[in-house]
Image (cartoon, rainbow, N blue to C red; front, side, top):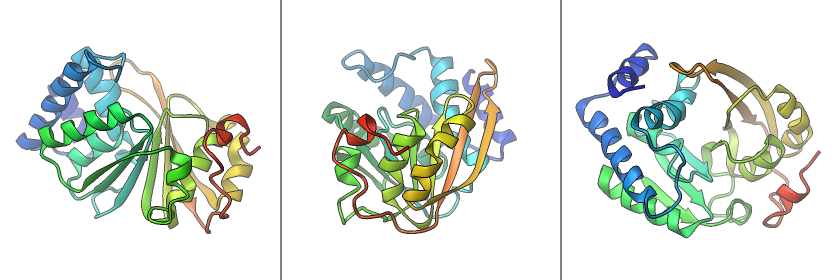
Length: 238
């Protein structure tokens, strides 16, 4: 997907990029490739692939959810800033908090923020398990997102404690996740969530399948969750 295809594909979804936003995506690509030579941020570096598999894919949740309002979003395990930074470029009204356990990636994100000249973006070097027990952040976000971080059973425990009641947890997955969702259904209910919808689509150009799971936060998460670092992954709620 070249730049013009990217812009036109978003236009078809009702997202119109101005010149500044187009330049921000160009800058994002250049900074990503430059820093990727010094540290492992992504295995995808070809420009057309980055625009498709990172930028377009990151924005895809906006095809099914309204990000045009002033929302506070937490991106868990964002790595190189996906999906929240592409969304922030498209929707400057968003307030974004990114949590990542690797300090080097946080350094990259700080540099990226300066290069893109975006505001209302905060970065936290922390494990999701401890971040979710921090009273400053627990159940404070309208939206909590994760993209290709872990299975739904694990993601639910990492993300739902951060979602405020009536907020939404959005899990972006690479393929059909109905069976994965069913496996996580008990955990989602226990943590205060309820499935809202599952959207499946195909990326343009390469036609690969993507699935986005939307979980509504219906009640408060029990205080014991998330458990200690590493425990959700070693012993998921099933």
